[in-house]
Length: 92
Image 1 (cartoon, rainbow, N blue to C red):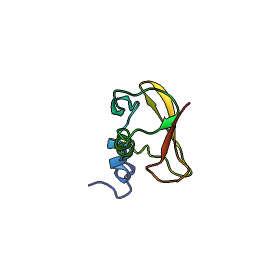
Image 2 (image 1 turned 90 degrees about the horizontal axis):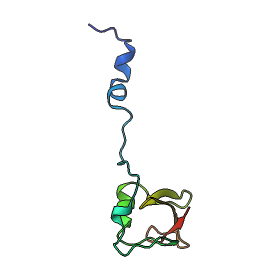
Image 3 (image 1 turned 60 degrees about the horizontal axis):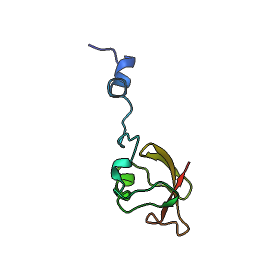
């Protein structure tokens, strides 16, 4: 019988499995850009939007996001409309 104040019972899930994560780790989104991709500041290509959503990398009005494309660091920000379909990529 375990005593009711056993510290290992209180956070058993966290200690064994770590903190729950709901996003998949990603280092580089190069596999999601079209074959014609060329580096530079530009609107986000339509091919990249689903991957940004999947990996929780869509920017918000108050929070740009950072990731790499083929090893080149980028910052994604919302464009002037503020809509999720209006995202721009900037070389870091």
